[in-house]
Image 1 (cartoon, helix red, strand yellow):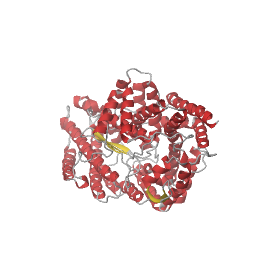
Image 2 (cartoon, helix red, strand yellow):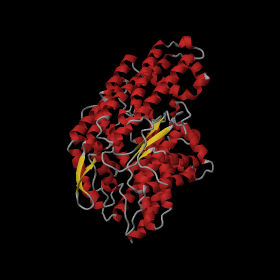
Image 3 (cartoon, rainbow, N blue to C red):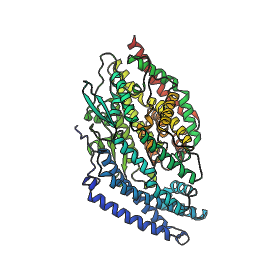
Length: 602
């Protein structure tokens, strides 16, 4: 089949960033927020008891407002991602942010109403039929409300964040748009690469020499503006730490763990498992370097593809990748395949490789229409096909929850990465199975190994850097040189000093450090990856996997992560046993790689 490589944003709001439909929708949302805030102020739980129809209506209204704002936000974010040079996006994005700030204030007041309920009233509320689906969410809101400051102070913090935390995050995007990397193409012709284009080449160009020459140019481009990036990161973190202190804590991991509904003991166990199983990955990297004709791998080689002998890796067309993904999804879950086919047919995906696109990729849900939109840049590699599958996994997760209340769809990032990584593994394994030669199989196992390398080494380096940075930032602003040294040391620690080159400016290049609404954006990936490995192993053994899997996904915003694992998998995530099962699958791939490559080297 033939599919378009550009997504359809017009069906969300016609007319681009100046859409009259969007403008009207934002006006309506503003009016709804004003009315809602008045209703909150006037609410009296005593008069509403014992059936609480007024509070039920408040709950419905808040969910509809937040869903409407998310719908608008996804559209505006999509416009910005399409063209990072489009200056017309910023004023509209600012308007959406202001409304989101008002919604945050309203949600805070809503939580404080729950705190004001007596225990008896709260139990009466939860007993109402219309509230029973939201028991976990309302209980969580009430607990969060108990840590809130007085309403006026919370409102002030939220408003200040527009020109504080959110502003610094937005400023980062503005800085990235100015990054240009002077370099050359494969024929030696001079070119100027955007940040996104250079990143794609650094990670995916098959020529080791080309990547090795590009890395210092990449570093130099970020170094030119490192002081600006240092200001941005320092002040973004400073705003966050000030907020934490105002709420009575200096533990900068408290909020990220709560957002992921994860116990500290679980995170500690994950990193212990990661540390205990690095050596096979480092041996794999050494072998990969040898296959590239190098004595040691450099930073630019870790995720890069390998080429053995005269083997030419298969390059997918977008249409081929789409059909392959649908087919492989179908072998595990007809419903996953159906969702993927619909996404390709209805232009949910922006995949074109062109200048001025935002780097990276993501999936966003459109709660009002029950759809999703996916953003990435497709260049034809097996990894790109896996990336599409990854984002479609997110979309599938959202799709099985569209009938649930909006609060029940608000799953945490760590479990979000479970569905995406699961989908990615389906496609990666299928690629390996269909290999025609040992050289092709070796290349495809290498592509599959990008994930464990990232989780156990790269993301571990990010976590080490971020924890050290936040610890130091509580004391002083860090210079760009300090940040460079801190990142370099974190990479050396995570990779056990095994690389020949590193990326000291990675702290500036990685968007994840600058996201305003999700602190410590990195560790949930590691959780999601290892959690999905355990689920994947069970899926291969289970005849009724699809129903079990969907049941787990539908519960992801309905309980803590530990309770989710206990209910649907019967495992204790604070113990290493479950995580070790996933590691065994990684080490099986490494064993296959080492055996195949031994033959090809000799």
